[in-house]
Image (cartoon, rainbow, N blue to C red; front, side, top):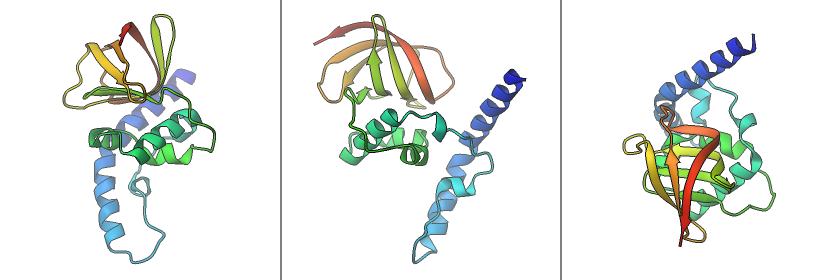
Length: 170
């Protein structure tokens, strides 16, 4: 029964990703017709809304939102991930470093390096350009370069990911 429930949730998340661009367009139109708050959210126009916000750790949300406030993240990341869910699970805890390892095609939010692996709270892959294999990412705070291995995946946004780290260079 647990496997069926997990499969249902995965299917619901997949369908939600397909409906989200239309919901965002509907949100823009609906909000353009309103003069006063409350304004609509994209998820207000979704049928397959997954319960993803409960699964995003608050330290990941805090790191992501601090990067958004500073304007560090490119537009493809904002369009790939559920921003409203990050807002819903943030708190006032101090932000842990490193906040993000990023390249032009991949971003690891709240990465924690182990011996030969990195555990990231969330990973975003550029839907057009990210390819599996070796990639060099940089710590947005320190500028240190780290080589990671991007595994084969059809998902462009994932939570609680463990990837292989090849080496760290200066």
